[in-house]
Amino acid sequence: MYKLYGVKSWGSLAPQCVLAELGVAHEMVWLTPEERRGAYRQVNPLGYVPTLALADGRLVFESSAIVAHLTDLKANELAPRPGTPDHAIYLSWMTWMNAEIYATMNAAEFLESEDNKTGDATSRAALAQAVRGKVDALFDIVERRLGETGGFMLGSKASAADIYLMMVTLWSRPNKQALYARCPRIAKLVAAVNARPATAKVLAENGLA
Ligand SMILES: N[C@@H](CCC(=O)N[C@@H](CS)C(=O)NCC(=O)O)C(=O)O
Image (cartoon, rainbow, N blue to C red):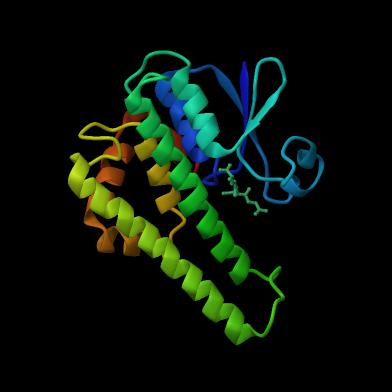
């Protein structure tokens, strides 16, 4: 059975939603933010969540890889089948959301955190603001895409890529409502994703209902 290591409302959210949506048997291992710094480093080298432990004990990290692995397990409505051109487009956007949006948000959070001691406070704040500006620009790219696709990341029907997008919007600044007000197509997509019964249940479990 799969074991998903997570922290509530963090990067384990999309993998947990996809496990629930697909009805895949799994166990959740909830960590506190502090626990990630200890023995969990042997599970995930950076102490990041999520990590998915396979039935044979091997460990899969990177949230987008975990989601794509799960949707590849069997034919389902959340993603195109592996090896097809549509699946290439799916992987492309999943990787982009992780490598660009998620990673840039992480960079901004680091710049804003007490761990960042580079230079003076003013230049740190200016740099963080510039990186937040890049995050906004990335969401603008998504907003434009949704105007071309029919409302969802891969077309006119929801997929796991939309669940992933919903997750990263939660961490936008100053808050998710500001993003949804600026990007109405993203807001509509998130509302549709959040209304899915399996996802709604997971959101409630993560304290996000
Ligand atoms: N690229 C990784 C990023 C994971 C990540 O940044 N997780 C955050 C939680 S949302 C984390 O564990 N941060 C802990 C830290 O920065 O120490 C993935 O997609 O899985």
